Image: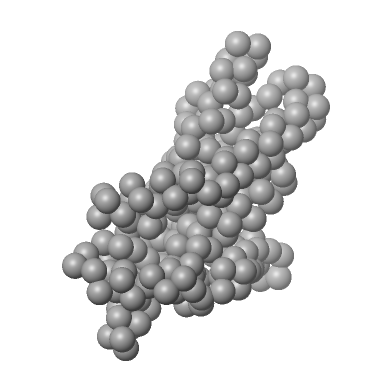
Amino acid sequence: MWAIIKKEVKTYFLSPIGYVFIGIFLIAFSISFYLELMYTGGRVQFNYIFTYLPTILSFAILIPLLTMRTFSEERKSGTEQLLLTSPISITKIVIAKFISAVIITLIAIACTSMFLIIIRCFGTLDITAALVTIFGFILLSMAYISIGILASSITENQIIAALITIITFVATWVLPEFLQTGASFSLINMFSKFTTGQINIAYTVTYLAFTVLCLILTITVMQRRKSAK
């Protein structure tokens, strides 16, 4: 499994995807930092930068860019057969691809620490709220990545996989606007609770359960494809 993780992470950086993902995310985060700076008159709160539209929109587009190739590319290039007949179990393959995408996302999130340093040097930093927000954003990322991997497992077209991922994410985003009970299923709404600086156990469990469910569904899809070969 570790060999697959190493291969996948290496692939992200041998192609422009890894660099584009990290670069665009940091540009969007910088714009959000500037907006927070202007809005608060210089009293920046790191935790709220994650909730600004540039950050969320870049996130909504970049995760599908990261995950759309996980299985779709294997199928399109004809290497899926080698993957399905390898001695490594489907479960390990899915988990390895998931971990690889999470690692790239963690690198991008880690790069935002420069803003923590800036705020610490020139303002007041609520380190607890910042760390809890980062934790919540990692949970949100894991849930979204699991959606993208599931979408990639059901189609060989990378664009369609990306669109399915974006539509699913946006649907959970805007659901509360149409249904009062929709707030309970909104990935973004759940994340906003973490920006208060308190870890919400219920939402943490929900994120993890959602991630595991999507991964199980992906494993099921790939197992069926293997059985059909």
